[in-house]
Image (cartoon, rainbow, N blue to C red; front, side, top):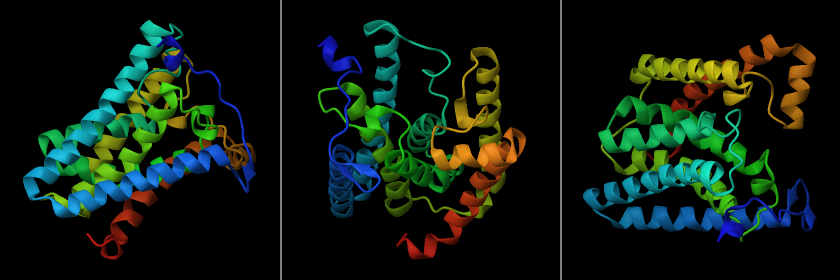
Length: 244
């Protein structure tokens, strides 16, 4: 069982354009899972649809909790500079759960605006080997792909099937949420020397690293924050084209 939780065995397979074939296989499975969940949701009544969304958000929170437990107590290599759930996507997992459980429209509006795109970027351009070269005998692989798929599914299903409509009326609460995320990430980075929220330095994605090198860290941070703010507005502008 310990072998399942250890992050070993990741290796590349056949290269297809910018993707590894193993990664493409995992992405296809994520797409198939998403299609099935959307199909099921469209056939359920409101109560059952809410239950399905709640199950998905709860399982996602359970998975990242199990990841921390794994690092801390099973393979015992927990690193506070990277193992805390304080990155964009981990924050969004927590917010998805809170928004769905307590029916907080402002929280759901925030995750609807930023979570799907950021999760998709993480799936297509992963930093770690669990996403780049999936190993299906490893817990981290399942956690990585399931978590980011749910970060796309849950906000979409909530907006489409729950009594919630994304709106710029929630802009101020969403700005407050974003401010808290940045503050918590910055404090954690200060004490752990980590890179939560990617505000200490650019993630190991060549394009983003090149931007930081070209403009400097301060301007990079301003661009990062500005990009999230722009994403918030663009997401709302695209609502009429999403079938919501």
